[in-house]
Length: 178
Ligand code: S3P
Image (cartoon, rainbow, N blue to C red; front, side, top):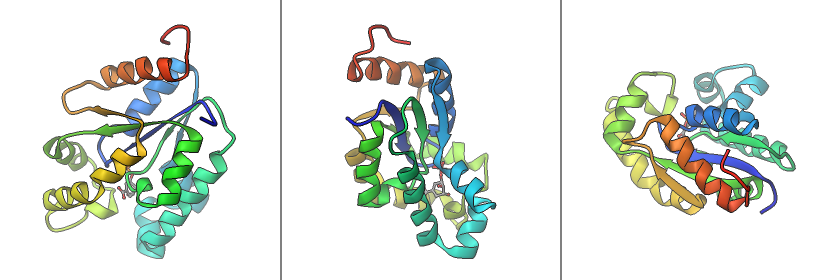
């Protein structure tokens, strides 16, 4: 393993950003959110990037951000839900550190993402069905990218973080769980 970062992958609403912040605080690591980085670099919201430049352009920017993170240590990196779509990204994720997949039941995801309407790919006539289709298309990619997976459906964010820290302690041979 090249770096000692923790990288979170998973579908929209799986809790990557919230749990990533908790992990970073517990570890004293820097928190990095790839979506945030793209928003800062492009000077506009994700929905605007999609509307103006299209999804392929956004996917390119995700790869750019992962490349800029190579060589960094002690980061918790929360990624956008589609980062696993590109094979090249999946290998970059591995280079960046310990890749943790977060999953959640379809209904739980629907409930969580319904609270926030900023995600361009879910602005469809039937978001529930869109989620179902996207989960079916991406499930295997998340599983392939992740070295360890936690189902967050019935857990609090703190409980998920605890679970990840226990696992990371073993992977990185930390003497104590932070
Ligand atoms: C996307 C997920 C979003 C964001 C963009 C595309 C996806 O991130 O990158 O809207 O393709 O699943 P979150 O997973 O943080 O919502």
